[in-house]
Length: 182
Image (cartoon, rainbow, N blue to C red; front, side):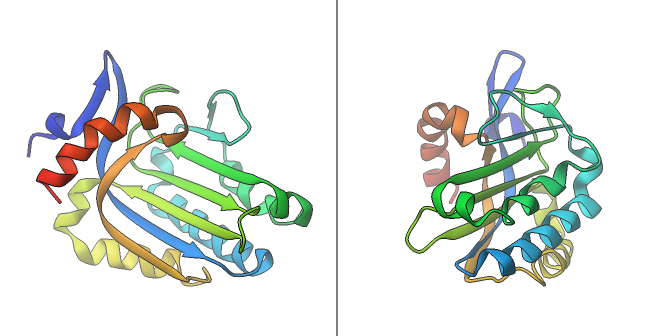
């Protein structure tokens, strides 16, 4: 497969990459969801964490380098119920060559505390080659989500990008590709 056809680039920067996406939604309590997120992120780290290079939260202006405790950040958000109830919190990490050139694998966590009812999203972008090994995907999903209070979710081909930064670039480019290759 020619991955370049399914990769959006701007010069040396990768803006979006084809991936296998695992997405889980929860409408559970913050306390129950915190345990689930913690387990899911640490399972992601066990499988793919050595590849992660950069991360940012929703209130950071730029990416920082991933450190040992980076994946603990979202778990601590649940300890402040006021923040959970009034803010949208986000955590995004990637394995790209630079802060703004993203690549897979990568996790994306969104906490929509202000929504009625509040909901939480765990997203994992996995290498597209894993589609040839569905048992590995299933094993990862079962382990990662065993404590996550799952309401609904899905798994399939998608694009990994930083929607907060690049939505206007990615959607017009990906739309025709997704229609042609659903």
